[in-house]
Image (cartoon, rainbow, N blue to C red):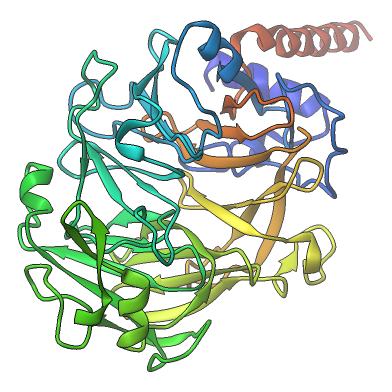
Length: 462
């Protein structure tokens, strides 16, 4: 055993937790914890360390905060939302990106090497509002979108930052109009580079965009032409359905409307026409869900891809196997609480964001204020798309805030990031969570080793 692991194991032993339990995971230590029995009290923790964590080996620290950004003269409208990183290409994993979910919008980038956070899409750019969705593209750029769409709206747009790594405060910010307008939040690419997205609305649907150039190396090519489909579960023309799923086209292969959806085209001003994805879905009988929000995609050991979808209003998470085309209910208030052994009930409320760690475990983040907002660990040992239990993994104390955008580092399996959004203080923060102690914490473990050594010497003299 390496010295660092030996020290940690010894300290765990002193705390009554076995080293075998702490290091059973193949790729990450995030799934080694003791479930929290309840919520942390609102306002009981400082905003510099606002999460009650479920393991003494987890630590947290603030990487960026809005007060500092404003003091540095950065355009920063707040409400920091979903997080992603530059997952491919030059200096992969160096930067984190996140939009601002405000009426002024904007996008910021955090350099994990230098610690510098800067706004790369200035608030107010192109009237961008309610930034929520955040994803790195297969061709190496950044995408975000507006969680705002409705009658007479000019929003609901999907944007691409084509130069996300450039040393600039005025990134190339391009609206991709071939994708129908909806209230965007979640989005994910599959292995064929098809793009999945949702309409965050009570009665919203799930969509798939298939580019005519799936191997494109630029967004101009990928979004030039493509066909959009809406999900129909158990036949469609229904709500909150599970069972056999299929995809119904709402556009042609080039992105133009079908005869059945031509009336979903709307004039959004300035000579621009777009498809209302919500209206088009209803026209062809797409299945409606109640505020579908985040999407995450997982590849199983057998190669199947599974899409997970959180629905906030119905307190549910669904799983869709893209190989078998089967939709299942992954987690709900009927799922067992690992602490009580009973149905989790109302302790599980408003699931919003989703995240997947290096071991393939699913995490569910609640859209609730501090003192009630939790991050849940979903146990699905057999990866059948139905969770056996839910465990409270972390709990947020900050009053007025919600945790959002949980993102597990693709290059360091024991590091994750989460935003603390819209606190009463107005000081949004970006947190780093680490599954092993920070260097300054090792003293505790070395002290544990010293204590064990002292006990051993005393025993040797007996």
